[in-house]
Length: 418
Image 1 (cartoon, rainbow, N blue to C red):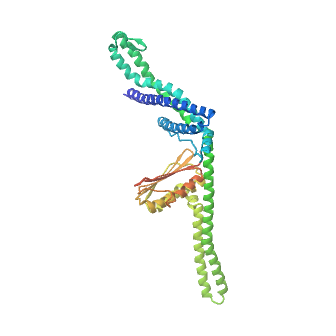
Image 2: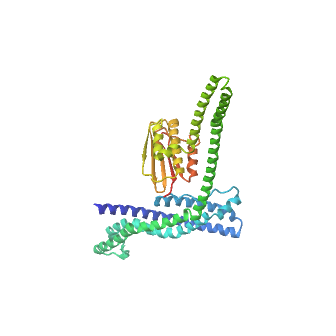
């Protein structure tokens, strides 16, 4: 039974690969046509200026055709091949210059050549593998219906009687079955891999995108740092400093009245003591927003469990082995969970929440899920934008999945070394 299941699985994969190659035959012929018209446009540019009007149209067609192939090839490979084009500038001349100088355009033209040549050749092989097996069975069974003077052929040889039909049919069936079961898939993966390499991001593109992303995250981190400093300064100035000034004034008054009115001096000292305690409380709160003391005392797991225990909405915590986590990552993870639980309590109308902490290689994964009403919008004052900026400052990844009606899942991946 197990060999039969393996053979069935192989046949299914081989059929899918052969179908991919067969469709590639059609796309290869279309690519050949597009390539021919593109060459005509380039020739018109060289001979007459009229080609400058036609060429952008053809390049736009090439772009859309390549995007369609990205989706088809990505579906076969089981991964996304995202478009690599940058937004084009305004103005005809600027758009044409940007398109012609874009390395993506050259790589898409190279893909057209590959598809027009290899796509057609491999597509013919895929078509033979896809339709060859059932057609062989029909040819073997109906060889005798061939017109007089035009004998049926099997395995490239004429068939004149049943013994030769069965023998040659078995040979052709075996060869085509082997092509479908063992040959189609490697050929399809070869074709898809080359197409993905031409249509996907090159190393230079990835580095350029990485530099651009880091520039944005660095700017975001600096803005977040500046905002955090302003918040701390505001809290200290408006809260703690004001209480310390009042404390100093009360102590001064108590000192001046201690001989003349000891009762009033005692009352002022009592008020000063109360003010000092309030100032210490506010100072602790400010310090806690910088680096929560509970992280130093209990670690990330204990701190998150404390947040869950204090949560208005009942929350459970599941934790895997996290290993060593840098302090900056711990602080960010703690604030993410705290903000997410606050959002659940204020906006979600949820009955429960789940917090998950796990280690995936060199990444710390934090996920907070609730069974609330969903529909979270980043710009609606829910703090999602702030959480995203915190994660971006550490070069992490942040996602929110919150369909209308729920559930909502907030997830972050933070780099913490290998």
